[in-house]
Length: 595
Image 1 (cartoon, rainbow, N blue to C red):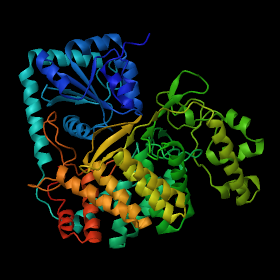
Image 2 (image 1 turned 30 degrees about the vertical axis):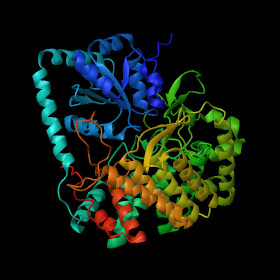
Image 3 (image 1 turned 180 degrees about the vertical axis):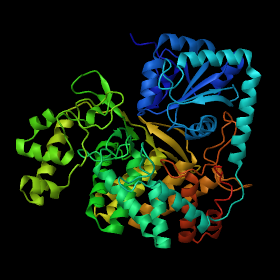
Image 4 (image 1 turned 45 degrees about the vertical axis):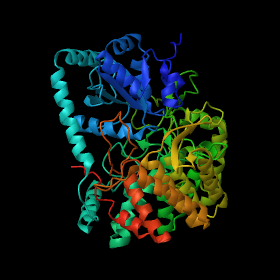
């Protein structure tokens, strides 16, 4: 029997709504929850995640639906749920705290706070009982309660020290332009981490690092160092051949759990698609290799087919988990994307099936090189194990015939897969990620000769202007879902949208997009600029947070401060605004450093 809905039932976030029937007495972030914690003298348990996060689902199913764990939370804590995609300012602040305390981070993020918002203990996923080298969540809650009751002064000291350190890093320090020596250091670090066999940086898990790709290509252009270019091209080729790419429907999964890019974490994020479209377009222009053009084009087609609202906005993500076609009602990671050898033979002509299986690594017993949780047993993750030339030699056919067979086979498998229950769609429309996609589509449309993609970019921009922009004061709302808009725009919303509009203006030469980018930049300066120390704060003023952060970290998305600086330089040149050009040149000043 489903539990009575809690406060989250009134929210719009798909992630919060996933928890609206938990027995946990959840609050959304806000003064109501913090005031209750203060009035009842209880610590706050803050859980941060997002709707397409696999391990968020795991912790929810293991702990947040468990009546005993819920009873502990409801008795001793005030529990708050936050969608990191709606409130990146909250996520960034407490992620910095989590990383400072544990040396790592991730989602779900689990943080314990004083009622004033200062953190004193943090972690990520906790199993219900001790396993995977992690403490059990129920035991942890008991230990936190005992410490709160008997050693609160110790917790207060931890919170005070941590907050001082975070504040110091958040204040920023005087910096000038990035020196060539710093760029050399960054390049050498990436070169040392590079995997020359399979591409990417470091060992498993491997993430698509679009910002690093951009840095390396810029480094190659300014220094002539060929290895900087070659690392990017090799990595992009290996990614496109790997299981991290959806060979049937297009688009890229979040990351690979293995060194060879074969086993993905199956969620698909809008920002990854936008950033990787740009990476593959760069590679296409540099190398002339049509493989890169195909990757960019297929990714654009995926977004326009599966992540596009009727009004023109772009949805946020598709889940990693989906219903297992062979076991209806049971959700497994990647189930929508997996195949058995038997299925392939049942859907394709026998010879075509043999060619397809040869080229895509399909095996009778499954092909996952690692499967720690038993999700892929007997199933196949499609990846290009052999190229068309190898298949032509094996089956005594021309490469053109092999290509035709594979294209036809992929279409047939796409039609069959479309009959499966699709992964959960996070259908909120975020301004920041739409800005990234607007820029990517505009650029792809002009480079690949697809004017309809430019039209789609303009339609998305028009959607945001109509639905998420307040003309009277030049401010953005961050999110739209189910006809309802909400949440104040963050720095990333202004910066990423302005960057997308500048791309759109460059492609269309329509000054309306340039003018709007300038309006957004005016508002961005008014709302986020630190007049004293320089740089831009990531979020608007919020008295529920201890202080505001100015981020400089390029992670899955580029740092909003960096994008804001580039926008200022571009607008300064286009509009003859020397003040903006100077502001862009000096924006590194005052952005926090990671020691």
